[in-house]
Length: 165
Image (cartoon, rainbow, N blue to C red):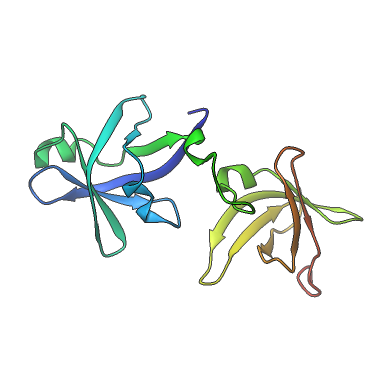
């Protein structure tokens, strides 16, 4: 889905009144409180009428889904929002979708491209892969990441000693 960002997946039902248990794919699950609705892969718009939290999941109530049977039919659907929803990100904040595919390099060489981003307790880590080489795990720290240039397609790094050993 071009120009759409995957923000979660419906993993189960919750209760008997059509609520949906969603595995959020954002480090800010409260995001669902700030938007009016989501889209499914087939382009169906679903208005959000309620948001609450249960353990590590977001519980969504969507207009038109009022029974456990209707909710069960939604299981495993991925939820999207338009990429434009994120046009006003703070300086230095990027979408994972924008980071994946960027070339990682320093002044002298290219290390490969970002293939994945995962979160640790304190910072993100970029998985960088180059053809025929083992992946490199680059911490997304200010001391390591010197510049991210989405338009030109690269991340400039200062590789810490020992990271490539």
